[in-house]
Image (cartoon, rainbow, N blue to C red):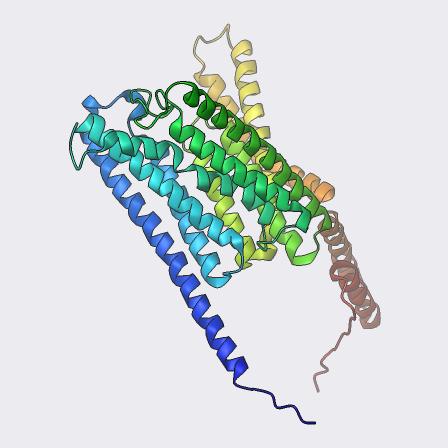
Length: 414
């Protein structure tokens, strides 16, 4: 009995897949466009607010941090749209898009509320209190997705094992309880202490929503801890490309933690660290210059240690010279000049020593390869026998590059 196969089914499925991919791409770039438009309008409102800052409370005035947060939103929007349009099945791209939309909408609502309530009371279309209410909770879906679901699903958009679905449920529960709790708790807002919640529920019900807000934060912390554990386990099991992808995000995580530690120094440091994480995630997922991560880690370790060394040396020498020269001069100009010269002279030898220490500790294969090449260079100056040089060259290539097979061809001029 012959069985007839319908060959028209494959092209039809392919066409359906292409249409689905096109719809996903259009949706992703539409979300990116919305976030970008909202960010531009927010910037325009901030300019208007700055022009009428005499009526705006000091804690609501725009600062340099607002510009950096706008950069973060645009980074999430662009990288998310790029990943979602090229890899629609990867949930990470859609998480970035959701985060961009949520944060851009929150920033737009906040700026609108500040302008309508303080800069130009009753201006625009009114509804300043409603927009203030919207701004304090609409960021929650995007924020929870980014800090709890992104680590859980990176880099391929899939869970480590099906058992981690419980963490997804925990994060979604945190998202709902936190959003409802913030939206319906009575009293003033944290971001708008001058404004009472127009939709807050008073009485015993208000206490329930306040408790929901606390429960939401607790659930978020638990889901964040679980997601971080998932990342560690995924890294330990990873090999090849996936390990390189995780290395990119691990390197960006160090920058992110350092930026939050330096937040008090400059308010733009935290968003700058988040922006570095967004770029690292985009590079890792799209595999653009993926194999440069070891170079990035190497340079980060070297110049981070070098900066710390020079800073300690500079401060120590300034204090020491001030004590030594206290009887000769009352000013610190000579001490500062001497310390600056000392640090300048120390830069090159310190960088070389730190580079050697980092290579020896963290990049041992590269360190051993460099030593092998140095030994071969010394041997090359003294050896003239062609057969001996050929054997030495094959040995060096095998030790440093570890290929499966080594062959050497020599051209003989006639």
